[in-house]
Image (cartoon, rainbow over all chains, first blue to last red; front, side):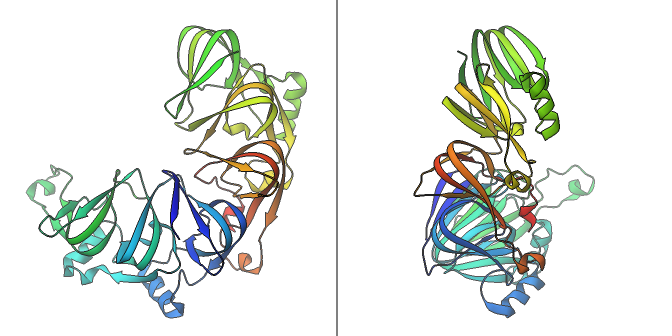
Length: 216
Length: 212
């Protein structure tokens, strides 16, 4: 089901019988109709194995299942919300940035080290986002939180995008990422520009960048 | 009557022509013309108001702003919403009330259990009469209409104000899972029934219910 953007910080979703959606716990602001909110111990779908996977990967943001017949408004902590519609591709996003998503999307975790080897691991450390990230795949809508507004930058072959790791929010599509470092002697003597690390994204898709270098 | 207008979403401009408004203490950010600021004890409701506000914990330190010119108000970069009252009553948390026309009467009312769950105490402030009021929200608030066919459920932490003929009831979804620490975080909701408007902000205050 699609999300309707009420303003920059609130979205509304329609829940119909037989449809499930997941949202971060406590992110409901208001609702109409008959809607139930049940805690999801597994932190999404996929059964016990994927739950263990997410626990180990530290991507286990508490989620709740939203079911029923009505409309629900979501928002959290006054963060900006970006709605991303997936058409069969994969979205890569940190679990704690997920506000709500369609229950039809397949959820998983991905080891960042598998992209870019050692530098992939360094990327996780530098961005403060850990070694794992959550993936959502399929057809449906996702509402993602960001600090400040969000811009969407398209990635096309031959036109790589470089992003400040702290401002990176999410990306989707067939995209490879790697961390490039420009650590020179200036950083060592404390005269660096403050832009020593950049995230390079190449391939076909889009990256979402927030207007802030703060975490949520 | 004082003219209220928004200057951007976070600053309230009030045009005064010798009349007065009541505003949250210390919320003036600028003014032109000639203004006087006088602190009112007990929300400017006299001795009775002072006593009830003390007793109910619905404390509100307000000042009376009187003069000729434009006075600008803002508070901690909160978003501001204008409310027009035509003889009806606005219920609002005292911490969310920025400014009211001096012609409006303010008071306190018992909210029952709802207040306890919303983290705002058991009492709320009421504003009644004809004139304008300005209320604050953490982020841009939305105005949701409640009709007799369509009741509305609101997260107590996201509720800021309501007006009209509305009954409110706190409903809880506390069950054994909540006590196992596996709650959905949506254990309490305020159910609004009747005819009226509810203001909801895109952010949640810390409430007891929010942790359950």
